[in-house]
Length: 232
Image 1 (tube, rainbow, N blue to C red):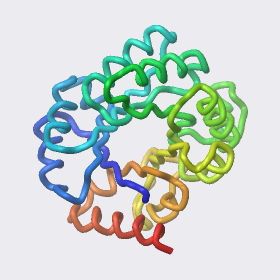
Image 2 (tube, rainbow, N blue to C red):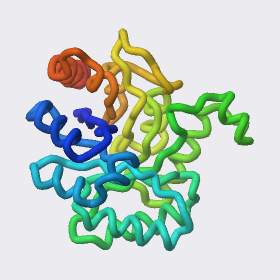
Image 3 (cartoon, rainbow, N blue to C red):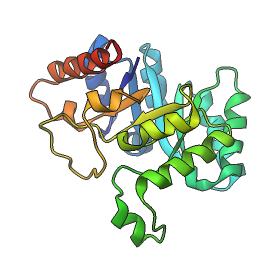
């Protein structure tokens, strides 16, 4: 069944803790990204884990293999359950991260970011890749599997083709989730929870919940949408 990850894209530990309290039993997984981690560090991760929740550490590591290997080991030792690196760092870098995670007592899942959901074909052309986002994401996913990654982060638009190419057990995490009546904001390749749940193992949702007048009601609606799709 597809699982919901709530994106803790907030300023500090106090606000993050408030959201964990608000969402209660409705959410088990929480994403800690760059903004919150840079402000609060490992203590933020340990706080969430200490409350019986799972942490998706989304730092998108991207450096030379040895540096990423050491960083992945540090991240895993904090007790995170899943973490991200950039697939564009190459096979050697991904293999180093996978090996580092596997050597830990409680290995976290390592997933490789393919193409950011804020990028479309025009943006890829500007940075010199000149490829359709779906094609580029699929090729990076195939490379990630060869490198020993547990899965990838990709938009809902690429999830189906990645599952078909890499297998049903290859994890697909999809950001860019928007409710039917939500604004897309800075995202370009989006889908509703129901659409994404058809192929994704995890969906990452932030603003549609945080900006809602009734966050609990929206969270329950999302959980119902992704549960309903899997029971068809």
